[in-house]
Image 1 (cartoon, rainbow, N blue to C red):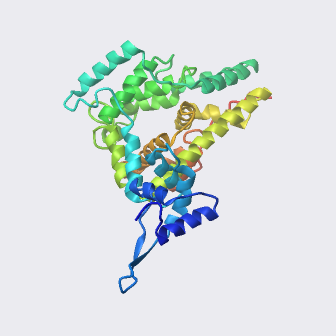
Image 2 (tube, rainbow, N blue to C red):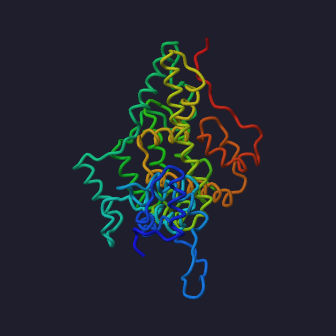
Image 3 (cartoon, rainbow, N blue to C red):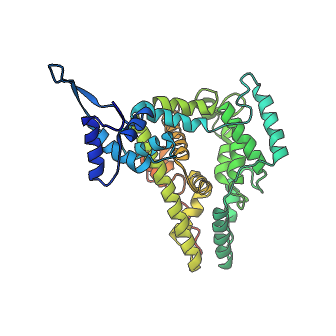
Length: 395
């Protein structure tokens, strides 16, 4: 049938779109189906006596056509459209959704990926040379976060206090100025992607480098001293050469591809929404802190900021500020990474019974939306989670 003459079933979809203010043509429906964004019509059987057959749109196609009319304009990437529609809760064909998440992972490339038989160490050496030649680095602390850090420190000092508090040094086995550079961070990230592991020393160094004004970082210290402090726990979660790898040791991107291919769609949808909530929380926190700084008075937002700068909540803020536009591909990557992290918490709970999960409720340790997803673990043995440190100057 010519695409200029819609079938009766397609006409129902076209009329439905028109009633909602969208112009949809038979050609557009054909293109969306060719890109596997829209299901075909359902056969309804023959009309009898050579009169042909009937068909009808799948029930989900009506809402999906409206979503496609909103997002599927000229020049839009089909994978981006699929992710946006999935994020809205529309029933995009499952293979298309999974292919879009997988394609997002495929955007994570490391120099030498096309050299199939290359030795890992040789690849990392070549990447280190590339960094030295080109000056390629990663942004550890975005400018907006630096301005907030500086503003808080300025107000604390003006009140006659010190920030960070000197007492933190007693909680850090390795206090001092961070030594990890942006080039070191770029190389560590590449090694983690290729190997699927990262040493505790690298993790601690990155935590310190992402909070460079802190001469003491207790959370980084806890990571760095895991082998000494809790050897039985370390034996379960670390490799023999002190690398963190809860899952099978392999390319980290393969873990994410597996999730894209096998995770229940409801889990992907929940993680997609949570990643969005984390981003909104981070941006709101930045705005609230900046309002307090403009008023010259540190309040609840500044306390939340300062507590989080030493833990995963602060890392989520930094990650958010690095992605100013946050296209669907980045949203999908954040979704898969979050889903992987949540899965590792569950895996760790099985490997090491008796973990003190209630500590995850400590102020600043996790972004609130992620903490909500882990309430079953947190509440299991919670004696009353401790609060973070209130570092506002006394009035």
